Amino acid sequence: MVAGKTAICTVGHEGAGLTYRGYDIADLAAHACFEEVAHLLIHERLPDRQELEAYRNKLRAARTLPLKLIGVLEALPGSTHPMDVMRTACSVLGNLEPERDFSQQRDAADRLLGVLPSAVLYWQRFHGDGVRIDTDSGEDGTAAHFLHLLHERSQSDAHCRALDVSLTLYAEHEFNASTFTARVIAATLSDLHSAVTGAIGALRGPLHGGANEAAMELIDRFDSPADAEQGVRDMLSRKELVMGFGHRVYRESDPRNAFNKRMARQLAEEAGDMRLFEISEAIERLMWSEKRLFANADFYSASVYRYLGIPTHLFTPIFVCSRVTGWCAHVFEQRADNRLIRPRAEYTGPAAQPWVPLESRP
Ligand SMILES: CC(C)(COP(=O)(O)OP(=O)(O)OC[C@H]1O[C@@H](n2cnc3c(N)ncnc32)[C@H](O)[C@@H]1OP(=O)(O)O)[C@@H](O)C(=O)NCCC(=O)NCCS
Image (cartoon, rainbow, N blue to C red; front, side):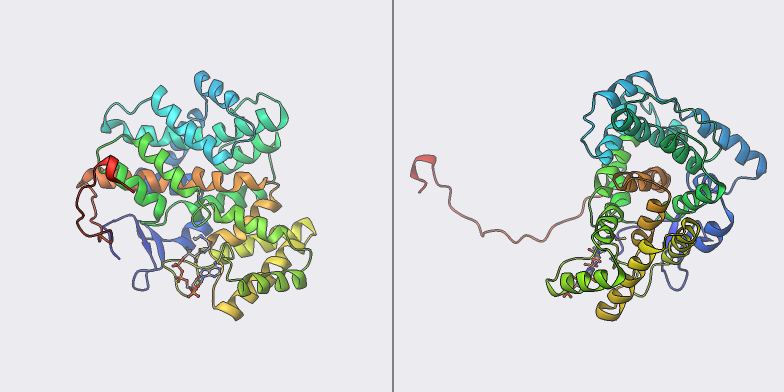
């Protein structure tokens, strides 16, 4: 069902495949860094060399956490889910640095892009390791910054590039549930932080962004490819959902999967530990032969993140760190030609009934 127009992204439209502002995802994943993609989405075009340098500097400066936000991150329970931390961090930033009018929207988006990774990793390290980290990692790229804060030191170029490509793959996907949520909120002429806070809430669910964590939990249940085949066969016979498979729009394959699968294989070879990859492949083969269901973007990204040493509960937050670019682009597009989004519902309730006074009700 077409719910509106967009000039930002195609998802399998008439042979165009997945494109961001006309650029094929294969080209972006192979040649661009995530900051170029972020600039393309938020600032509407690919930057030249100088603009990219300036943009990287701007995002680096935007990583600093306001003191009051640090106080909130420390006060939140260590047992909460980091997606709830991100939702709260975004909302708190909307209090501390509100978008006063729409002319500031792109600066507010860049600030969110800088703050969100710092916020979730500050919370993670404070509650997980009992340390107060300096969120100024000095790293150029968002991916390298994320891995540095998580592991306390710079990671290899190969690892940084793997996460960087993953951020590009997750950055935008047309009118998915979280993006549509952001547009519905933006269409009331609300502020950017409200739209992104709502989008984070929508992304959290296991049928959407939460699927990468659910896929990891599934893969982790099995010790070997044979064990996985039997386990997934049993799940299918019980008509259970296998997370990381299927898609509402794609029917044959998810164009992002090939990149994630290749990266998962490379990282497994580099680690000298193919177990996770082979279990994943066994599940993928079985899902295709039994159900004609293909792996979506979330399935192999789970293995990629595991090989990068990222704890499972941070998988969906990484999706946020990336998709915030797409959400913001859609908010701006909605604002530029706004009409309140107000669908109608088909009524399925009772027919008109006579009023029954309180004392006469059975
Ligand atoms: C993404 C998703 C919500 C799309 O749902 P959808 O468009 O309603 O899927 P379809 O209606 O085309 O499904 C057709 C059939 O395949 C089944 N199916 C779809 N995805 C399945 C999965 N991941 N595992 C097992 N069965 C699945 C459906 O139950 C349905 O079976 P039925 O005909 O016996 O009722 C669904 O595939 C899903 O829940 N996937 C797992 C979660 C996930 O990975 N989400 C991330 C998406 S990017």
